[in-house]
Length: 248
Image (cartoon, rainbow, N blue to C red; front, side, top):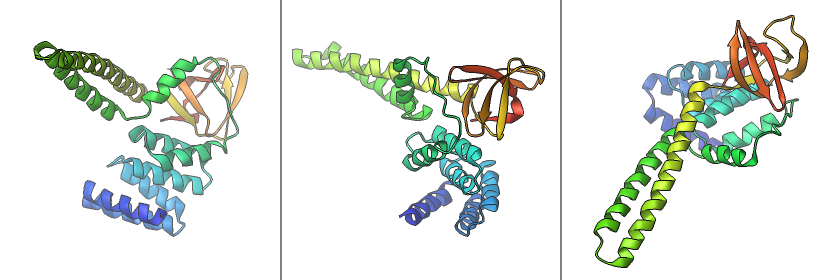
């Protein structure tokens, strides 16, 4: 089944990518199938320089995971899900990789409604939310037209209710698209890519050690000062070197 899925993805990639990239994709998949994960990862990285596709990030994550590079695998899976939020295999592999990281820090201060809103927003991509908003807005205009010019009362009532409901959903979809656009441009989420990192009380090596982070942990990045980043994870806030993390 996995081989069939891989074949389908390869075929789609051939049609959607330049011939040279399609050939590189086939070569990378062959290297992966042969167990040459390091060279396969290098080939996938080269493909991403020209064509960033969720399947490439997904396979890259698999190649890193096979090498025991959990942080790089998590980073690749996260990037794949940015491009295709509804990617079941990627979600499964991400959860499996995250189960192997040492840190398991939860943010206890995030309101549950905010968590629900974020989960709902992440169901679709920014582009999908935007087009959905436009479609719903057109539906709202049609409902308004039916309400204004319908001859039968039941038709006007139907148009009214469809119109306001579609307009409300359009606004929600537009908010989701805008929120994802801000997230992807701000790039405030990052993955720790070094083995062990000491978070400091100030952006300096002489700062007091506050807590320890391990590779694979997701953090939220704030301001950057002289090569140091302010990071927030769970209830903890500290400063770490910019080289210790990579933004999603």
